[in-house]
Amino acid sequence: MDGSRLAAGGVADFAAGLVNPSLRLGVTGLSRAGKTVFITALVNALLNGGRFPAFEALSGGRITRAYLEPQPDDDLPRFAYEQHARALTGDDRHWPESTSRISQLRIAVEYTPSGLISRSFGRGKLHIDIVDYPGEWLLDLPLLRMSYPEWSAATIAASRAAPRLAHAAEFHEVLAGLDPGGSADELAAIRAAEVFTAYLARCRRDDVSLSSLPPGRFLMPGDYKGSPLLAFAPLDIAPGTELHKGSLGGLMERRYRSYVSGIVKPFFYGHFARLDRQIVLVDALTALNAGAAAVKDLEQALTGILACFRQGPNALLSTLFGRRIDRVLFAATKADLLHHSSHDRLENILKLIVGEAMTRAEFQGADVDAAALAAVRATREATVRQNGETLECILGTPLAGEAIGATQFDGATEAAIFPGDLPKDPRKALDGSLEGSLKFVRFRPPLRKDGGWPHIRLDRTMQFLLGDRFR
Image 1 (cartoon, rainbow, N blue to C red):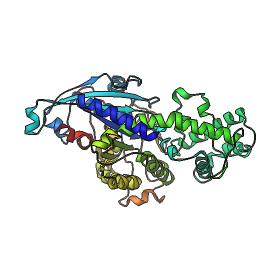
Image 2: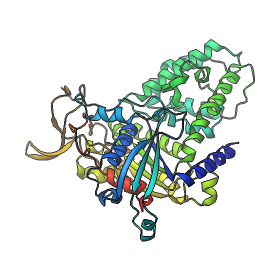
Image 3: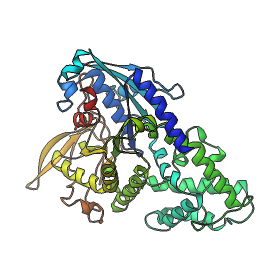
Image 4: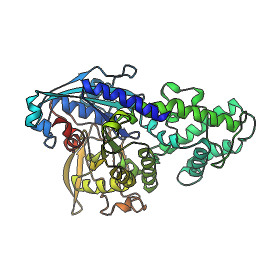
């Protein structure tokens, strides 16, 4: 059945592409990785231009026109590009709100091909389709490969180890009173789901910043809030446990299966299984702020998620019966929170975090790259002398409420901040030796109303993901 879904989507996309050549770009990332800002900045660059020397089609003047078109999927809301752009550039400039539902945008780009033969056929035109979604939903993809007993056993085991253990007391108390073999109890299932959701929310707080917290809809339910599909929780059972119909365990298992088949599979096969290119946005700095446990958890979450994607070169049959992702860029976001001298070190930490996923993609034949990225740069660089020492700092306006030690920022005053030095050896990001030595604060978007938006390596990113399609 899953193969049929892939084939049906592949044939439909192939037929549509014969008339309107298109590229489906997957912007993949967990919550707060910066998907919405990246999409907004990418679209703004194509529509309005700017300084993008590494993006050859734009810097060389071969992109002649770009404009937004009605999206191809009528059942998806439109990505609110104009609203997000106003948020970034308005008088009360601020970062767009976190995504709470799925949305889509199509941008058409007309260009002059670079090849002599291609130019003889006139101008080219490419449709770029981009889908935005809550990052929490991405956490569900590994559930496609797990049974309810397997998920329960893994989730309970993780809750009994640091750092989750410190936040799981109430959940463990409720769990101890649940009998998997007892009669199905609707109120007990609802109560367990509520307490389990509260436990997941505590693990996501900034000071903990754990990433592997499925099911994702528990934290961002969207239209499913209050639905029985979200009224289940893990039980203290072994991976191979057989749960009987009519028992509490049977009720939980049935709802888990319904969740996977009714929510996760349509989400995956409707969007991710149809991608051509993929950028994986990784908020490594927030994890580094929280400590080594958060970095390790981020590594595990991304490894499990990215194992679900089909990557590798495309041929006619793969295009017809389920296309593959032939280019993958791993990007460490918020690089503007660091001095440029640390960008290479951030890239090395990123490569360590996503090393297994990068190796798998390369083995499957996909082109792979990694970069430190800021789709919208919120800071400038400055050198500060303090106690006879020269510090490479960043300069910008911290968000109201951000703090370093006893200093709390008001959201209106610029400040020069030394965030700390990333280690030359990326393995130190995972061994706990950085605890307390780094402090990254969030800044307001830059004050910029006209012209291109400042960025770090957005042009290199666009060249890798899109450049070959404008030849």
